[in-house]
Structure formats: structure tokens, C-alpha cells
Length: 236
Image (cartoon, rainbow, N blue to C red):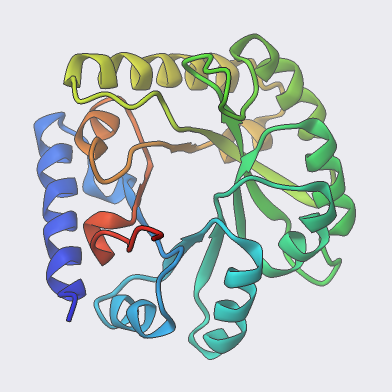
């Protein structure tokens, strides 16, 4: 049996040590448990250990879990690629979307967010290392996107998200995360509305292998799957 409670304790300890090492308050860093391909029972075990925020990549799978676990009142974050024909369901089911990579998607999410629900929290995905096969806004297009998206009525733009190029080098990891933090700060400073600027408070970056580097460079949400649930089974 996967020792999920132990893994969560170990992950939180890593987060705390990383926060201490760069003189950050632990309360400024949130743990998002990436539960894609995990069972309802595994999620329930994580909930029993104190986790309430879960990230999902695949809509059909997530919809089933959200329905089954509805009574637990969890906070669900969509972190996967978004197809235009899926935005209505995403807008209805999730509290957060981290992977908005086109203004068209933001408009659809705003239009389709139910009026009786609070605004949908979103982050704009940035292709910080300019990788050809990876989704995300180019760095030089973020400011214009922020201005337009802040005008959409059913969204709350919370910040930026990135999945940098994989590297085992801490120096390279921190370089990508540092550029994200600099971009975040410059975008935040340019937001004219005081309320919109105050709400722009999230840097979603860092995963199981590099969360220390991400925290050192200002991550406010780290997305951890393997570190909590263990390695996922590889397809045959």
C-alpha cells in the first residue's frame, strides 16, 4: 500500500525546509496534490492527511472523481491542456485553471462560468523556455494578455504558471524559475487596477523533482504528484 500520509509529511517537510532556507514564510506556499491517474481511495487518503487542493489533467477522469467526492468539498484545479470543446465543463467543475494558454480559452471560460458560482481563478501558462512542443504564452505576449483577460467578468486572474524545461541542474532550474519571478513581478507592477493587482498573487511552478528551486525563486503553489502518490504505472 502506498504510504500517502508519510509522503505528504515528507513533502511538507521539504517545503518547510526550502522556505526556511530562503527566509520565506511557510504560509505563502501551498501544496497542490496532482491526482491524475490516482484512485478515489488514494485521494481520500490524502484528504485524511490534510490535503484539500487537487490537480487534474484529464477532464473525463476528473469529472468522475469530482462527482464521487463531492461531499468532501475539495478545491479542484485543472492543470492539463485545454480543448475548446471542454471549456464549458471545466468552467462548471473547477475552482482553478492553471493552464490557460490562449485568450480565446479565457473568453470561453468566462462566458461559460455559471453565474451562481464565484469567478473562476485562473493562471496564464507561460512557455518560459520557449520550447517548441510546449504550450503557453510567449513571454513578450503576457502583458497584453493580462490586460485583456482582466476585463473578463467571470474570471479572476491570479497569476502565472510554468513547466520549465526538465533539468537535473539546480542552476538551470533556478534560472528558469527566476525568469518567471521577474516576469511575474513586472506584470504585476504594470496592472493598473488596485484590486486586480492585489489579486495577482500566484506563481504556480515547481514539481516533485524541483520544488526547492521553485520555492527559492518565489513559487506560491508547488504541484506534486509522484512525491505524494508514488510513481504512476507506465503503460505497457
